Image (cartoon, rainbow, N blue to C red):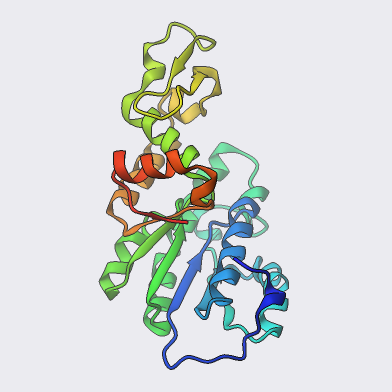
Length: 251
């Protein structure tokens, strides 16, 4: 897609598509979602980003130039119920959370945004929701209003396909040590890795493992996935994601 300077926002359409962009509250997830919302706005879509009051200034700084060029992009806010889950008010973003127990409580607080999110959907009438993978409950809310929910992982077809094949076939369970290599089954390219390279929640069941299962189940029920990639970069893995794993994706 082109740069901001290649276009201006003066052209109008009779009816704009309106999309909600709902990132998870941590910089590595917010930044690519903001960039995507800007790209959609530059193509004539009304883009609305969902943020907490703590992150709102960052969002507005990030979209300032896009707004000044006349594109239809804005921010609405929701307040995290931190006190209700026993977290101090300074824990407004995941990168400010410092322990596994605080992380568990933070995920609880994020889940409790469901009513605020639903109210915003009622008020703003978006045509579509693109939300972070760690917001699985949005899959249940969007269909109530007749709109699709698409998932954004912020990563590539290669990463998503490899992760899914490890999850489905569990090749790490058949090796004798953390340093022994295994091939990722049913995946192009004979990709080898070791059990030590897997996240803790994959190697053994943790509290996060249960949440991750919910994330994957939500993905299967969603309308599809928006991928932070392009076809020419990884054609074999883009095809594998659709043709072999049977997942619908856009990039």
